[in-house]
Image 1 (cartoon, rainbow, N blue to C red):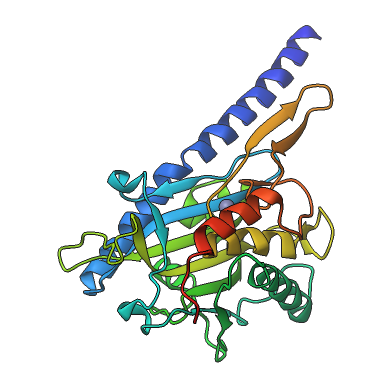
Image 2 (cartoon, rainbow, N blue to C red; image 1 turned 90 degrees about the vertical axis):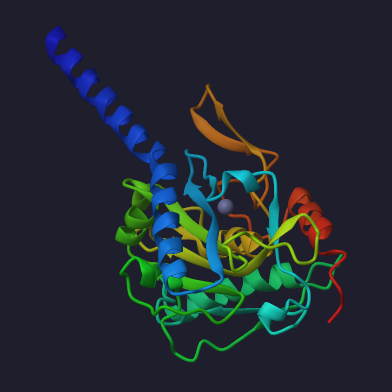
Length: 300
Ligand SMILES: [Zn+2]
């Protein structure tokens, strides 16, 4: 009898160990993905590189920010106002891919309404006029990373910030490493401009690398809903990933309460690196981050 119990515990322990080890390898997997995508971009003669991957996880794991260049670890990354490489405009153009625009468990109309609510939340903050302008998707299957990894789309980009849609779990395992499909809810890829020698540029000398474009993908292996902690609330996750879209990083620490085994973040914020509950409104730290980044952006 004792032997049987021992074996059960051993199996559970090994299972947990295996799961954690597999997922902790994802930073290495992400670097492989970055190197692969950047090799493709270089071969195509594009002055653009994938620089940062940020992902948000479900409940009990902490998402990460992974940089391609370690030398830029201390730097942020932001759009350049009036960037000649980006149409010379001070506006930030975004679009939502309708081809992959339906979350599991919802209609496309419900999914897109929640997405638009989240974008509107960022666009209506009082401390800064954030020049977010929506572009039509023209029925195209947008997403450079999904194309590069063989998951549809095509090898181009258009908007500054693209919600590339809800993709199958296999995309997340391929891009971020095994077990990612079971843990990652959303991921943001930030591409930066590089010069002819391949070095990142900072043409406005603000100490931040110049963003070329960003793409967000959502994991359709999870069930999605509206206003429920589980299924996953679309608006909450879009609000978080769009936070990366407007150059805000992760914030807050993960804690575990021993008494009930529950996980929580402190301070609670939309930009916490893990999803614990519905958060359709920005918290104080989210707003502070947003204002510090955007308050000095030139008016359009
Ligand atoms: Zn995140």
